[in-house]
Image (cartoon, rainbow, N blue to C red; front, side, top):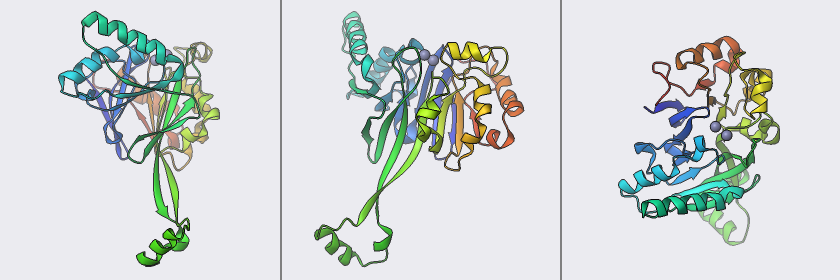
Length: 286
Ligand SMILES: [Zn+2]
Ligand SMILES: [Zn+2]
């Protein structure tokens, strides 16, 4: 039932149907983006990042927590989300805990656009502003690696250690933008958070793909239309961006026609780095 694709060093596994459910895991990074559908194999990930409070993105939270407990995971997942929804989500989980006489526990972390917090190991999460009718965020996962400054490379270890002891800043932090995630948003997210276009992989919604939905109607619902991606095609051609993963497709389209639509409509150079998060051989999951 889950779809899986490979984008550079990362696997993207889950389900995404616009307005229905979106849950996307990146196991190599240990993260789950949104929890719109409960899935057995996604329950043990410890870091969940919620884009916003619409039910197709958070509606399966309680079920996913239940599956997690069934798998013997006793620690609460750390759940990053827009700060404005922390209290509402806590109230919803409290009501569901009461309903089933069993505690549904998360470690909630509220974020504002521009905030950056440690995630796991050398991985950090940066929140970016998305544009939807409710409080919403996108995320950039940044790997920060301490590296010896170039002028000290080649020096013997003892000398470097002595410099360090003397308080010399011999190392610098290198940042690599591993992965960006932006869904349920107007395309202007890219103007406000151009870092998304410098990620190795960008997971981006493209809910509507052709004239079956007019661009104005897509914008009215605060979603991206493929026309708008085509208009900005050059912006996606930056060399740092190796993979553009499009997702959150509307059920207006059948899974088997999506790749053909992208091939026909996207400029060749952009199509080459674009992956559609859909299994063309099956109907929409569920
Ligand atoms: Zn959605
Ligand atoms: Zn939404």
